Image (cartoon, rainbow, N blue to C red; front, top):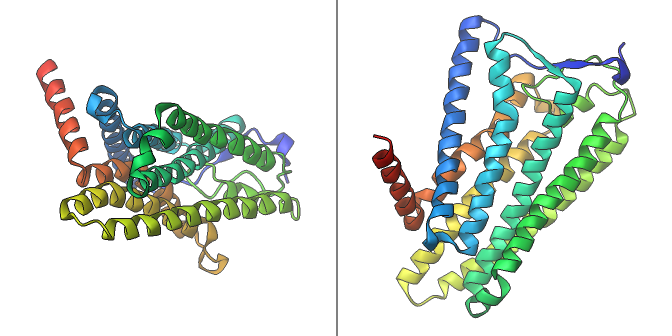
Length: 311
């Protein structure tokens, strides 16, 4: 059996057995990737160019779009390249980089979603203190903390995973390098440290989740007490998209990583990995723009300007 020092590359899971299906999957993934690039790119451009959107909520939304672009760009381009060149290989360093980047973007995104729930809580429950608590310096500090937390957490997780001795070959049963699949390749009993770290991570995620839930309970209580129907509608239009994004993000990750081993299968693992690594970055721009008139108006301006400049 090879050990970790002799492994120079890993073999990823092919998405299909026949060449025709592989090419079909390539075009499907390419369409999803382009849709994610377009949606998140429009959000970033709209927020950056429209002075009316230079507020804390849209500043955090811009950061979320950047993280979504990074997340989906970590997995899909390599998967599409492997399909196009009819190969399964990814180098050891490439696999480690993929693990590091995916954990970085996802952990930073969850930290940012937690911060965004605090932003909505302050805006609705403490509106008189919003300008003080969410000034530009505070927003920049919180965003930097989210990105910095992602870097630190990812470094520790990646170093812990790839320091394990690997005795079960180099075949990763996933279309990208995923920590649970790499742990399956480690020597028996050697992955206990990483399992403990995963449970610690789950505890942190649960704490953030409880914070988000408590924030939204207070938000909805404050919204329902509003005398103006227009005020309630405006509050819901800013809160519901964020709540939908959080629900989509957490439900797919929880099911992918915490599902019972008895229902695990290669096909189900593949579907779950697609759901949490591909679907949220693609749908987030749509969710945020569906009920937000300011975003829709700004995106429309960006599209009209682009069409005018490049007929």
